[in-house]
Image 1 (cartoon, helix red, strand yellow):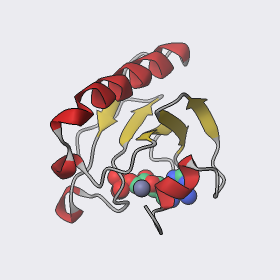
Image 2 (cartoon, rainbow, N blue to C red; image 1 turned 180 degrees about the vertical axis):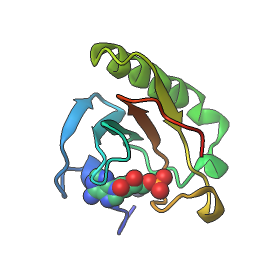
Image 3 (tube, helix red, strand yellow; image 1 turned 120 degrees about the vertical axis):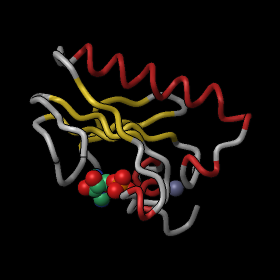
Length: 110
Ligand code: AMP
Ligand code: ZN
């Protein structure tokens, strides 16, 4: 998708501090961390938000969660929070689906 920041990052047209990559997923550090650990788990496929998920994306969504779990365990987080903001009122600023992985301190619900 043209002019999508996270598409550009997943295609390496823009830089990011990559933590993990596979065929379908890129994980990188959030540029404005809200916790000691703040990663973004991002599908390479452009999906605008949870509202645009289709049945064909079922497996990909499972992969995103498994990658989030693997990274949290690799980083030995004692606990963590996974957040998917959806829509402007839901706090979504970047219109490319992503899971925030937050940890390294107790994370409160908003
Ligand atoms: P959201 O509000 O859920 O759409 O989250 C977007 C997140 O992307 C925010 O936490 C931003 O700090 C983060 N962000 C914006 N631009 C970049 C970037 N170039 N590299 C890494 N993270 C970014
Ligand atoms: Zn995109």
